[in-house]
Length: 80
Image 1 (cartoon, rainbow, N blue to C red):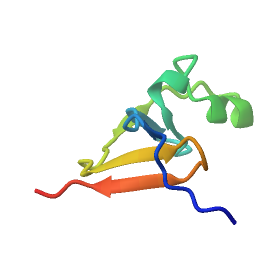
Image 2: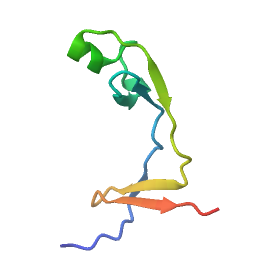
Image 3: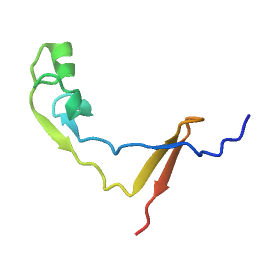
């Protein structure tokens, strides 16, 4: 096993806004929703369920980096 010094880091973007179907509870990112109805409800039951709720994201006090050399995820907590 080689030792990586993590000198080639890439800052990862924060998570995007997510929505949850009120019927089947499928949780996806808003930009993944290609049609105005839930794809899971439509595929399973043929129902075009359009009732979604926003999923509250916790206040992020962390930043994530990925080492491009070894692929390790590094989380750094921000102190107040």
